Length: 259
Image (cartoon, rainbow, N blue to C red):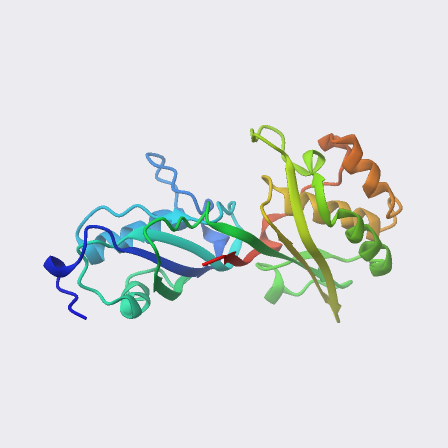
């Protein structure tokens, strides 16, 4: 295939899978004019350097400050580029900071949209459950020194799965048309000192995963019984649910598409 710019069509839609350590960033979304460091800003700076033109990227999820990703997905128009698709990760990783990496690239149809074409997202929340903290895990997990009742957590998690109105698990001041979401699965894995909660759904409200995790921890710490989760869902008020746990334990693991 000839990749000279004059041989390329006007639209060349590229999908990238991106991993990053979000510790040093003010979230994924570019906050133009603020000077704040963001993942999108770094990606667009790198693409501008490679292409010589302004490139705007579309992200599948607007992860918050301090939140990480292993499977964030972006897309952008690479029309006029002379870099083969399979070499884009190598080219971008040469100019991105070390805490951001492009792990895969592929050509997608013109109508592919990283956010609106997604059919599911999977987030993981990691908890370090031990009496003594471990500094090696402090950037990627939430330290909980008290014993957790995992049987109770799993019972509560089962009540959260399915299609519900998750209004009680949405941060205040985040307007959306609907607070109904379908949580396909919520798996709790506890191995030694690391506890991982995997949330897979068709979409998530602002801070929804962190609030659900805070609520499940309240159950696991015996602050209230598992069936109380049902009352929280039915009450549809944020103050009924548990606290919003810190961002460093959250990671966007995977975004799935029908293509």
